[in-house]
Image 1 (cartoon, rainbow, N blue to C red):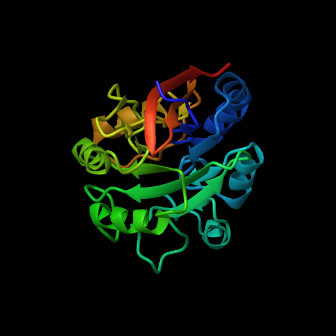
Image 2 (image 1 turned 180 degrees about the horizontal axis):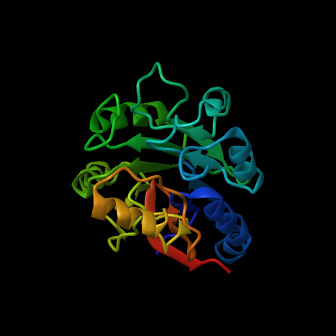
Image 3 (image 1 turned 90 degrees about the horizontal axis):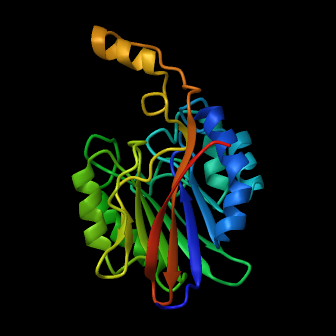
Length: 264
């Protein structure tokens, strides 16, 4: 097997304060066990289950997170707008309108000189993204050409068909394509024939005992009554969910391994 030159620990949607505490509590041990070159975290549900604030983003960066990605709740809190413009390593989906705050691509470099490009992309099926994902990803990769050794694409999408299709579309062109948004981890993590690591959804970091992060009683009541329900973040059975991707030379992944850990 080729020598691993970089590894990426990607952690799925952090939900509420419980998800943040779970991440912050478990991350030091994960660093010691896996020694990742980069840590990338989806934080779009980090503030009470909806959006992110500058204070929370600073907390995650302070804990050693290299890149924060977002999704359909990127603009839920207006106080994050200016932060998105002024901080390179927090991303909203690249295929949002160019007039909207923030940017969707960045490059970070490890202490050893390895450069990782990260693209945050939104699905178009059932989600509001201003531009088509399968067109804009080619534009994003053009921006990264010659600037990085590996590329991670996070696809924040609802439809599994759209997510699987993007994996095949990018196979051999990027190091990894990881899906987020549904909060439910899938069992299809693999390295595709062209050398791209792929998984449809990495899952969420937060209360597995709820319904995709919210109190189960509230979610069930909404389904039973067909009435609007005020959702609150659950505090039942917190887990950290993510993947570890190991990469070798030439934009290739050697392996992808699920990381599914209950809170200590």
